[in-house]
Picture 1 (cartoon, rainbow, N blue to C red):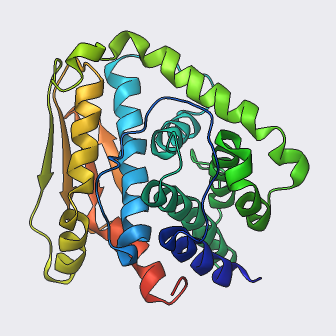
Picture 2 (cartoon, helix red, strand yellow):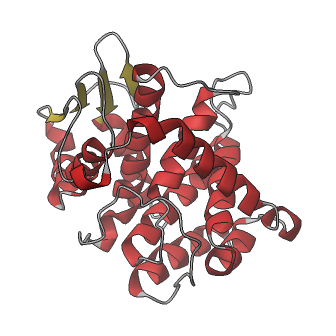
Length: 278
């Protein structure tokens, strides 16, 4: 099966219930609400936007809480975003969202192979490496449920066998680091620390459709709300979606602000409109 066909089958089979993970090992509940519905055409864009959001929130946690990081911070916050999005138990929407993220990095790696610059010197891992790292965490969380997907993605059987250790280490490391800042269970519906504010700047005319897309199901705001109720933050954080003239997302420590550019979301959408998963 070609990669493009596999991507289409995995995303839409997952949504229709034809591809369903089995029992999963218990781990910390993710921040994606289970009671939100999402249109299947939006899964790829929303999934990758959510991953970007949690990635940048990982940077914010490292900075605001002065968390120690051994190794590259970019790899660590990729892991935070992935274990945050991987659901504790099988869930069609959540499963499809994390599959979309893994496939998104694979697509971007394929595009880089077609003439894009490969930044071996960059602070981020290569797109293909980010793809395989996320697939490994997925199958590490549930070898039965994600085994066929991991094989189809190109992960060798011998690597799949070791992925549970990667998942447990990533999950347990973040849980241990963040445990002192977790809300007490009886305060789970209250924001005890500093607030997180989400701002959507006015999009450019050509960005209006994506602006409506990312706000339509309330998934981003709901995820942020659950995040704010889970951790006690020492300072307010702003999450700003804005036109930037650059396909980028970043955490600004001096402003305590996460910026996610509409142009980056447009790149996720371009993979759809170019027919790569339809």
